[in-house]
Length: 252
Image (cartoon, rainbow, N blue to C red; front, side, top):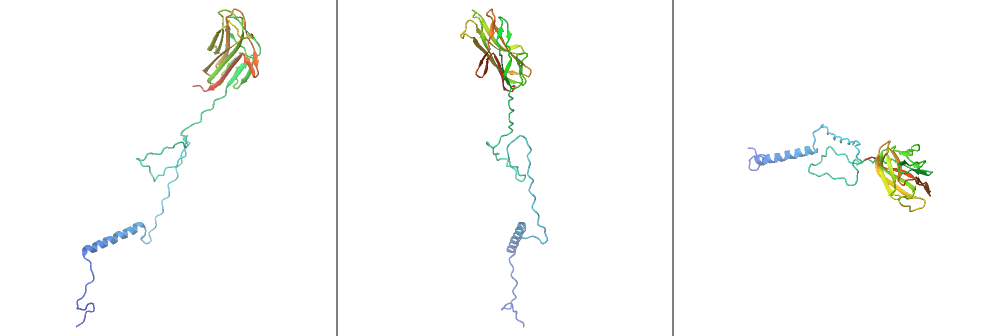
């Protein structure tokens, strides 16, 4: 009779077996762990090629739209949240600002070098012979006028030094004309003279002018006898008679 070497009692031991419920649970846990390692790349099948990293998106080039702001291009793989307010740029850039056009320097000042007779009760063109300055070729010596070469809003000034006979109820007038029509007018009494050499009178206005407009200075008096436009100069040039125009701004 042979002896069973696996047991003293002669009984043959069966191999260790787990109950079915516990064995299923253990196998499931091992399978889950294997899947985790495969997913993380720790365990990879033999001969499988490692996928290369996708190239990053090309940088976005902004077209010149007049915006001087320097902004970072948006990443295509990082969309903005719709519920997140966009941050405003404060004081770091100037949106769509276009430099203002420079104001063209245009102006002239003309004067007379001799006295001129101003008849009674007749509107008379004041005559000018010399330009103190003329930045836009405006002075027309033949007609004693200033011709507008650049449209814009202008300051116009005229000055006359009167020598006249004091007359009761008489007037003296000075006006600036544009294309023959008065656009600025000043009238004063000719019933007294403060200074022995004459009385100064001025007229001025600011007006929009077009290219080709003709500016003149006209005088009129009602003393009944001739009066005189007296020429006088100062330390820096002519004082009277004078016609001056200066462009202040472009046309509105």
